[in-house]
Amino acid sequence: MKNSPLASPNIVSVSPRSALIVSLANPMFVRST
Image (cartoon, rainbow, N blue to C red; front, side, top):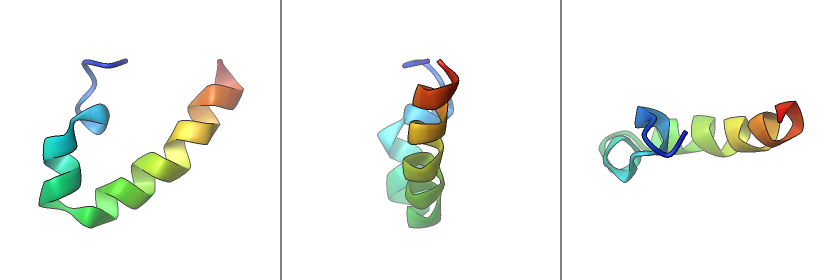
């Protein structure tokens, strides 16, 4: 999922809100996998 746009630092820099979503989504993905 490294190619996923959510992992792209560009989106994080564009909208810091996405960073919060990604940070919250990361642990969820870890639990899913």
